[in-house]
Amino acid sequence: MKSLLKITSRIILAASVISLAACNQSGQKTTANLNMTDTTKSTLPSAKGFEKTIDGQKTHLYLLKNKNGAEAAITNYGAHLISLLVPDENGKLTDVVLGFDDIDGYKKAMSAYYGATIGRYGNRIAKGHFVLDGKEYTLFINNKPNTLHGGKKGFNDVVWDVSQSNGQSITMTYLSKDGEEGYPGNLNVKVTYELTDENAVKISYEATTDKNTVINLTNHSYFNLNGVGSGTILDHILQLKAANYTPIDPTSIPTGEIAPVAGTPFDFTSPATIGSRINNTDTQLKNGSGYDHNFVLDKHDINTPIATATGDKSGIVLEVFTDEPGIQFYSGNFMSGSNTLLNGKTDDHRTGFCLETQHFPDSPNRPNFPSTELKPGESYKTVTIYKFSVKK
Ligand code: BGC
Image (cartoon, rainbow, N blue to C red; front, side, top):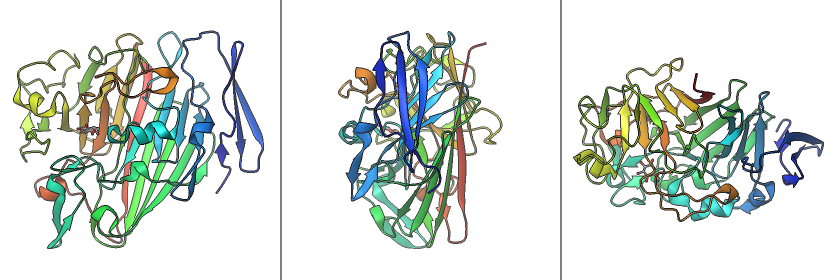
């Protein structure tokens, strides 16, 4: 482990200054001071709630900061992105990612997957069943009648090893053993979060296996670009560069069809507010209880944004770049206000949305979808960038 920057002491709110004290592995302290004249300003969680031993392994809180003052908090429990402070159009640092004060918050809200790294297979596999090389595999059914986001104990609920951490990036690794959650092959997984000086969170995933397997990793951050706890996301403006999507059955499994969005409430090819058509009478919206669908990206080279969202109150703009073929747009339909987030905010209905870059749901059972197979000798590599700026 190299220069491991670990926050070991809590944020001290004193008069008009927040003092973030951190220390590296050799115990050297680093201190960053932020001016704190606005008491509504978002604050990062304290390290204490993340100092635990889970499954015999230590968990911690890690802080990234770029030269513009943007900050991200991450934990190696489930490789969660906890909090992300970026400036709004008035320069006010705003937390745009929903997260909790402590690991107990994540444990309690497990099925919401706030900010989690999802694996081995993000999204659903029909009836927890697939066939690979003629052999049948059975997975845990955690989202009746299907398996969702890795099963009973997905990558969001395991402790990752931190292999590298400096002030602007952190790399975590996890060995998912052959047979874990029913999947074949020892899978060595690596995820790196980097907070760039362009106010972007770049997430890079890598994996190798020793047996043929399936893999679909993603990040499950819920965004509210007006700030966590600031109310509905229905007035955010969204654009998705996707002329097609994959319709679902009432259990949220793709029907197999690649359908055009034109003339439907799924047409976000031109910017539209999330809420403008969400209550339309539409079988697909009914099946998803709102938007909870995979969009087929027109292009997926990492250099052009495939999704753009704008906070109506903050002017914060999120652009998503990915090399993945799909993106799950989930409008927070099952959020119910039952969880208390950082800074005492609650996760009320549709106060966060997800843009989960991915291969298509249920691909192991859909030969017409891009393949999610990974074979020994191959390396799985994929990158997603969430870049923040303000409206021009
Ligand atoms: C799924 C939703 C699910 C949410 C939280 C999303 O990726 O598509 O159906 O409710 O994750 O688990």
